[in-house]
Image (cartoon, rainbow, N blue to C red; front, side, top):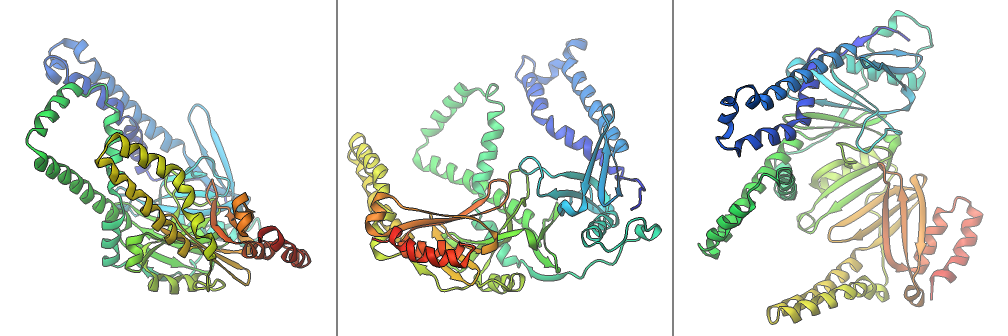
Length: 509
């Protein structure tokens, strides 16, 4: 392959500078925030000579250092293609080289930020199954043209398919025609609004505020704030309640806008090898999910969305995640089941999406709630005793737990269809896993002493997904059903037949 060296776009120097400044936001706010609380405030910095200006001068030196560092990183970063590998060289004092075989690249994920889009650039993250830390890509090209990104993708496809023999010269520099891509789904405005208003992002906003405030706990005058709060409480419960409601409403509105920005123009496309997910308003992201990496599909429905026929679909992908925290890949952030199922049937025609589920037996119903009494009854008793008579309201937890257990019992089930297993269970939200047999890493059946007396068992299927894996678990099902699943998973037909005969004795009463 060609050994021509390619460089990043010059805007990469500025992006490196911005990234470095972002990491210094908290230290800068702390340094200058301390001066705001000094006698004379921030103006005292300019009235004490060079000593007062010292924090400002240190900050200026740091900013200049980050700017020079960003330029050097851009100048020293090169990449090229050689011997079926993407090769990267970077570093000033310590020169580093990274060789990534094309056949080990799992996907190329693209991001177009507000600085990329006007210039027709993208940020490319190279993902492999062996990528290091959670959420960390194997390599990152901060800013390259879309043509260069297409060139990397075409080189990867050529290496994987063995299209071009080694040593063939100039024709390699031409970017071959891209594979035809079909649009399967585009999120409507109605679905986007429903997603934004029911996403629960208010918790993310409030936790972000809490984290921000925790960084400056030493500078916050808690005593003054406490006095102000106590004075505010004298206005009465109505004013306090309205104020709390206003704060929550503002946080909810912020979360709505953040969700809309993140999922704007959500689109699913596909070719013969990959699924492509594109989304974002201010920052446009494109994620590729190879079909061969898909381990399973999970459809989730919380009670409110289930009531109106909406669901979320997650792809369980081997080594696949987005973001910095092993975030799962959402194939559908939110859509009607009537919209989801035809798209899934086209993407995965070998799978059955509406199999007939076998539920848990009636005799297992109380197993879904009786263990919860071990913590509910002591808690309710303690609250009732110490906060009598209002604490008696805690006794309502008992019927609530029973009703939740009955609801879970009615939800759980499994289905075996050829070489596919579907498993459904519920915490509060309902989850249904669809897994092909060849993707199952392990199946484990378990029985407690009390389950054994009633001839019931719990079973769990584990698949490879992200860094930690994923598991589908159906609790308190009939023992014969557990044996049937174990026999289905047995790779040898002879062993499966033998196990099918013997296992009912282990799992039945």
